[in-house]
Image (cartoon, rainbow, N blue to C red; front, side, top):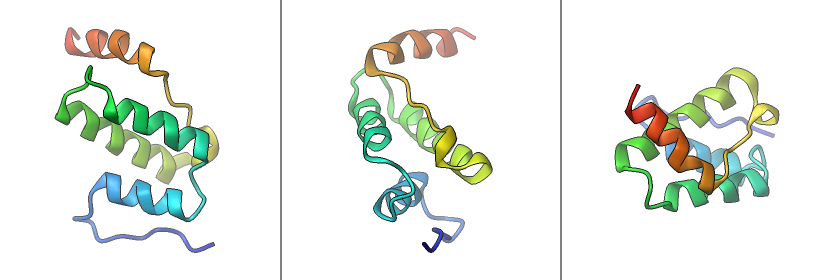
Length: 84
């Protein structure tokens, strides 16, 4: 399978979507990530930070290491990060 190599100005979400379409991100991980992206608990900047984080994990360690939190865990995580 070809790896997704995009121009450096491509968004993290675009890259992740390409990886998903290539089968490098599993359906369960993708669905959980999309639930987090759709959550009203996260701001636009936090969503983009999550996308960049997932992209970095994919580049450094591959899809096998992806473990997305549940939506109900997102509020606790964001509260901790916002007050750090």
